[in-house]
Each structure stands twice: as structure tokens, then as C-alpha cells.
Length: 260
Image (tube, rainbow, N blue to C red; front, side):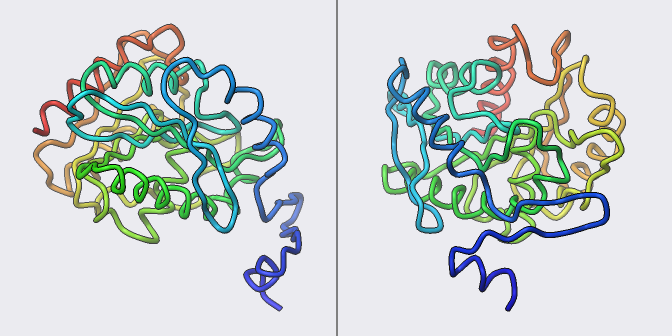
């Protein structure tokens, strides 16, 4: 019986590779705990329970007056949709610039899981991204931007590789290409095959792998030929944009404004 068939029967599967054990599905219990920790203390926006693959997952929807577009936000590895660094500043700050936001709970594993542990569960992000797009469409948003940070970028790129980018208006990647020591990316990002404008944004204090691969990403973005695509470096920012929330929001909002 293949893995997909086992998933359909609700069986937990381990995929074995030399020296590594990969869980074949996210840690749904941990996702529940994360939601319980944050849902009652959300100060801006509303908790929305969306459905993907027959399970509910948390989204936080924050509406802008006279919304110019809606931005789906995908957090980094092991975090949640109201994470204090990167995610909360964006999901709240972009609203002040006229962009509604929907921050989604992405698949997580145990706290010490690495990039290679996560790779087998990237596929679980597909249905969540599509659920987010449907939710925003049902709420009247015609322009949906997909914004992803760190491991969220890997998940977004896996979805685009499988499904294409025809249902989104633009893509924003923050800290693109971050992995772990001696764990190079399994597949190149499909940047040069995308049709929507792309913003590749990272900090000057980024992880070495993100900076090292920046010229290749820039070349791929140039090859796709969209005049509004850009690669930008945020001075003084690290991978998590620690204490740089306002500058991050301003950079993203400025780029989005140039698309109109």
C-alpha cells in the first residue's frame, strides 16, 4: 500500500532514510496547543477556523478599511500566526497601509525538527494556502498576495511548484532559502517560471545561506521578466527582523503600492 493510501486510513507513517527519520504528517497536537495559547489574547483581528484535508486550522483575519488587496501570511518553522517577530508586525501593520491580512497556522513538527524533517510535510501546506485563498475570495477580496517567511517560503514554493501561481496577485518571500547546517535545499525555487511579481526581501544580517544564494535568486527573478519584481535588502535586519517590524512593514507596503 502506498503512503497516500495509508494517509487516507489515518495511519501514521515514518519515512526512513539513512541516518534520518521523517514524520509523514504534522504534529497536529502541537498546533492545537499553539492555538490555545494565542487565540484568547489576539488584540487585533479575529480568529477564523478554516478547513484543510478534513481538519480545522487557525487563521487570523484582520480587515483594512477600503482594502486595496489581501495578504496571506505564512510564518516560519514551528511558529504560529501571531508570532511576535515578523508575523504580528506584518499582519497588523499592513492593515494600517490599507491591506487586509490573513495569517495562517502552517504545519509544524516538534521544536527541534530541522529542514530535512520538514520537507516531507510541505505538501500539507497546499490545502491550507488554498483554503486561505478561498476564504479571502469569499470575503470579497479580488487581489490576494502570498507572503511567506523562512520555512513558510519552502512551503509556498512547494505549492507553487505543484499548483502554479495563477490564483495569487503577487508573491513576497522573506529570508528565502534558509535551511540547516549540511542540509542544502532539496529543490530549487521555481522563481523563473512564475508569472506574478516577486519581492525577495532579506536582512543585511541574514543567515549565510540566504545571502549566498541571493545572486541566483536575483537572476531567476530577472529571467521571469516581470518589471515590478525586486530583490531588496533591509539594513540592520536579521533573519527574524527582530526590532525591525516597522521597517519591514514599510518596505512591504511600499512595494505593494508600486504594483497598483
